[in-house]
Amino acid sequence: MANPVISGDGIFSHVFLGAADMEKSVAFYDAALGALGISNLGPFGNDWILYGRDKPAFIIARPGNGNAPSSNGITVGFAAASPAEVDAFHAAGLKAGGTDEGKPGPRDHLPGAYAAYLRDPAGNKICTYTFV
Image 1: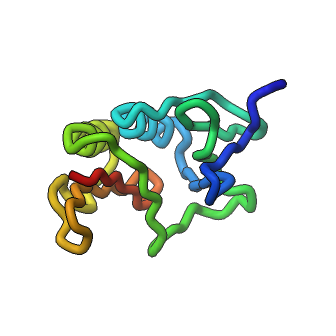
Image 2: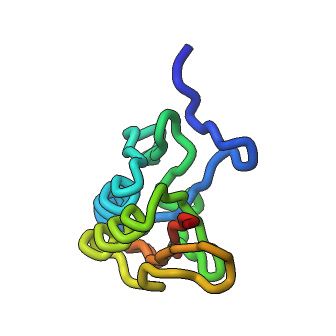
């Protein structure tokens, strides 16, 4: 049986974020998510790019309606295994064209939380958390 196009994790079937410039967004997500062990699983359909560990659950693509991506107020969080992965995610994302939305470090609102936030090239806010 072929791998499913979307797989989810028991809560979400998938997360889809719009990209204005696919080349810049792919470079950004390859770097930032690669630091977390999440791989670019390749294209699907109309220029969608699928990401996941074993199977796809995160997708970037140009919005289907042709409008510019817009996600102010939305944050997608990715799990990290350690503070070092959080640091690597943030550094790789900045180097690949993202902008800082919250430097790596402890977060007071959750006990033991260590996190970092970025904006991708399309302005989507993403983060990664680990708990120590």
